[in-house]
Amino acid sequence: MFQFYNTLTRHKEEFKPANPPAVSFYQCGPTVYWTQHIGNMRAMVLADFLVRSLRYSGFKVKFARNYTDVGHLTSDEDSGEDKMEKAAKREGKSPLEIAEHYIEVFENDVAALNCLEPDVKPRATEYVKQMQEMVQALIDKGFCYATDLAVYFDISKAKDYTRLSGQDLEKNISEAGKGDASDPGKRNSADFSVWFFKAGAHKNALQTWSHKFIFSDGKIIEGEGFPGWHLECSAMNYAIFGPTIDIHMGGVEHIPVHHTNEIAQIEAFSGEKFVHLWLHNEHLMVDGGKMSKSLGNVYSVDSLKEQGFEPLVYRYFLLGAHYRSKQNFTLEALQGAKSAFDKLRETVRDWEVSGEKISEEYKKRFFSAIEDDLNTPQALAVMWEMIGDATCPSSEKAATLLEFDKVLGLKLDEFIGKKTEVPDEVMILVKAREAARVNKNWSESDRLRDEIAKLGFIVEDTPQGQKIKNVLV
Ligand code: AMP
Ligand code: ZN
Image (tube, rainbow, N blue to C red; front, side, top):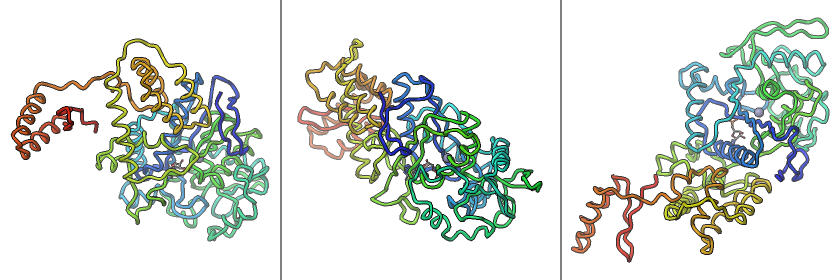
C-alpha cells in the first residue's frame, strides 16, 4: 500500500486512486525555450520513478507531461517577456522552430536517463481552442473580467484560493503585486491573466490566435492574443483527463502561484475537485546554491557526458536523495555516484543467472521503502545490503535485482551475469603489457594501456596481476 505526502493536506496519506487500477497523472513539463538543465531533469527522473513504481504494483498509469510552447512569461506573474519569443529573438528562429528544436533535445535527454515516454505529450499550442472555451466559460460564470491588456481571473471569487500553499492571502497579494505595474486596470494585483491581448507590452507578440470573448454586459472583445501559462495546464488537464485527476506533480516553486492558479481556474470551471494528490519535488542545488549562468554552474545532460559521466550515472545519483529533500550536486558527489554505480555493475557481472527464485525478504523490504513516500535512498540501502549478503546465492540476488531494476531503471540487465568477454586482439595487448611490466618498461606499459582503452577495456594492476574490465562510459 503506497503512502504519499500530499501537499494539499500536509499529511502522508494512503494512496487511493478514484478508479483503481487506473491512475491519472499529470506533471508540469518543460518550457521548451532552452536546454533543460540537470535540475529540471531531477523532476523528470522522479516522475519516471513514480510511474515505474505504480506500474510495478499493478496500477494502470496514464501519464501526461506537457510542453509549454507559448505563454510562459519570464516572471510567473503577469509581467515580462514570453520565454519562447525571447529565445526566438536570441537564436534568430521562429517560436515554432525553437519549440521543435528544444523538444528534440529534451526527448533525447530524458531517453538517455532511461525515463519512459509519457502516454500523452500535449503541446500548449495544440489546445488553444479548449483554452479559449475555458476562458469564455469562466467569463460566463463571473470569475473573469477584462482590461485593455488581458482577461483576468478574479482571485477574490475563487473558493479558498490559497489552500494549497497555506499562505496568507494578504501576503500573497502584496508579493505578487511587487513591481507589478503591468496593468493598472487589474482589480487586485494577485489576479492573474488567463488570456493576454496583443497589446501593451505584448503588442509585438509573435504567437497569437484570434479571439472573441462575450461578457455579461453584452460587451464583445475581439482581436488577437495568447493564453496565460497557468490556464494552459488547467485546459490541457481537462481535455485529457476531465475535471479530476489522481496525481499532479511539479516543482515546489509552483505551489504558491502556478498550481494555486491551476486549481482556481479548473475548479471554477468544473465545480469539482481537481487533484486528489499533489506531489512536489524539491530542487537540485548546485555547489550549495542555485544553478546560474553567471556562476558558470549550469549543467546539462550533454555537458555531463562531455565530462565523462554517462546519463545513467546521474540517474543513479538522483535516486540517492528523497524527492522531498533538496539535493546538492557537485562533480565530486557525481564522481562518488559513478564509483558506486561502476562497482555495482562490475559486481553483478560475476553472478549466476540460473533460476527465477527471488529473495522475498529483500523484495519486501525494498518495495516497502518505495511504498513509503518513494524512499529511494532506503531502497538503495536495501539493495546494497542484499549485494553484500554472502548467505544469499548469487542467482537469487540476480533474479531479485532484476525485479528492483524494473523501478530503478538503471539497465542492470545489461550487466547482471554478463561476464566480461575479452577479445583476442585485446588479450594480445594485455600479454604484451605483462611482458613490458616484467621488463620494467613503464612507458611501453602505459602506451599499451592506452591502446587497450581505445578498444574499450581498462586494465588494473592488482597483486594477482592485471584485471581487465569493460570501460563503462
Ligand atoms: P520549467 O521549464 O522552468 O517550467 O521547468 C520544468 C520543470 O523543472 C518544472 O517542473 C520545475 O519545477 C522543475 N525544476 C526547475 N528547476 C529545478 C531544480 N533546480 N530542481 C528540480 N526541479 C526543477
Ligand atoms: Zn503546470
